Length: 374
Image (cartoon, rainbow, N blue to C red; front, side):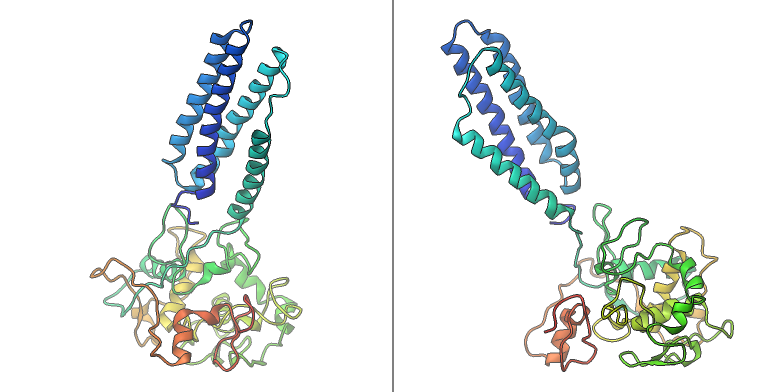
């Protein structure tokens, strides 16, 4: 269930509550007719108001999207039904009427309770989109740092965001990472404040030795840990200080996730990262795309300020050979990702993005650890 849609279960419960409001009204009217001493106009008017309120709230529920539905249901509608039940009980108690709770009513509230618990749990789980990655095109002309960081945001989240909820772009980062303070889905570290942490991390004793030592080669990626000048030339920075920097740490984390694994976010005793190597299939980010993502991560916590960004713009990058994500105005609709069955196995698996989560023996780069081994 995506945030811009109606929540099916809560919409259905709202309808049931409206029907229940009518049921209690009819039940009270019948009871008043059977007992002349009961003030039928008073009680009938009270329960008619409840029935009308339930109907209007149900109609209002269908004008809301999922997140607003849940907020309205628990903040307003649920308490109206609780008040209705309390008033219904007062009606029977004050008029000394007993045995009015039929088996169908008891069954209704048992089912409603179970449904609410189920709906609450399923909506508590992280709601993530899985949109196709944005189109790729060459960078045409010069770009500003603001535009370059925006390219990085699109690579991470995709070009479209609905109801304020981030989608998932070519980089696939939101599948496992979160980006806002205090938001943690538990798979991989929250990237809020990563710019500041990148400078501190490389000074830690644990970084120097775990899970491999600086200067050692990580087998899965082929990256030499802590050596910016031994990064593959296609991605190596051309200028800057002659020492390992925060920028280098972020780049290394993308190209060699197992070079350093944040505590409690790895496998095999925090010696292996579940994150795929993003410069290899199926993600396969180019040099410009990697730098764009770094630019976004370095600037995202200070909107409008780019003083902390250290990567060069594409037009100023001596190592740039072209190629980055850009908007294609000729077709506003994203084409679905699919395979026809005529491709070879490697191509099909990488196109569908299976290695992002699964380890697949015999398929190069398929080392995902979030899902079961295939």
